Image (cartoon, rainbow, N blue to C red):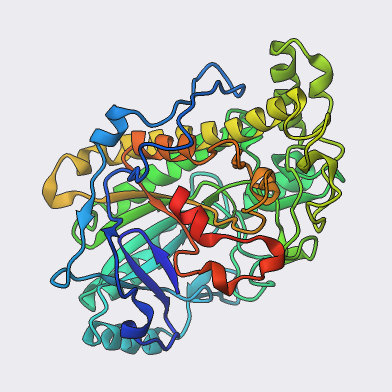
Length: 446
């Protein structure tokens, strides 16, 4: 089970007892038009400057909290159950075009789910399917057929606009790549993808370094995402707010706002490794150099931390994640981590601003109102250490001394986006104590 803001998700082929899996008590139902700030007084209240640009990242203040909503749960309120469409719902026909697998069986399954009391279906809408063959050539026929099937079954929709690939996570079985024309550009220029310090690239998602660089057939990555969102809204306008109740915007690998610091699908990383920083494509390195020059320390822009271990390192014995002159607590460490996390936050800010603008006219009408959602990663291992190394490599500048999620959720809240966080169902007692995990601590903080 993976929980989402607004409901519970189950895979389509899962067998589950709702009475067993639903929490016995809930103080809050986190279904909101903006992110709920649950702890207004406490350890983390500071403001800090972002080196990622002129924008200042601030803690949530009274203006943010005034927009938040807390709904008290009770025995009389229903929790809507959503079932996630299987990842292998689509397959390629002989001509290489995607189609829906086992259409008759799917129709029967949807009707059975409706009879069982399921409220709706979660569907990933893949960039690599719709704009598959050439730029700006959108083919929505597959999703028109699927959405009609779901709607005719009396079910609602949660839609996730997915700008990533899941080829590695599915080991090539039923996976969806980035658009083929993007892959062709990547064959020539691998720097459109994130790179680690060994030079290995990850083609699951475009590097945020090309957000503003027109390398994609004359468009920037942000323009590609915006054009896709506009095309989706124009095509399914009649469904928005009636059948489609939620639109989640993909912000990175697996749709999450993070760097691909823990690439489990290709064998480079395995749990509980700390991961590696992903800033070595030439566009991010150019940005790092400019940030270092603005800071008056041009030597800091030559490379990322050289003492931060490797993918499967443990924190102990890795100088950057311990206390010392060359650690995350040093002037250089703070500079790098502010830049690295700040670029990620600016990436989310830019995409969510475009999404919120596109959906604004629907939000203003109660009959067509749709929830905007964004997702962060659940990096819960090594959470109980001083440095939180796995979170740092993923792009969350969160340590025992600094709240790294406050600026992230503040950006979400500013654009009216609800927060989707995984690992809601996990308990600290279910994790290996050796690895100092705390999914519960992460959830409380977020």
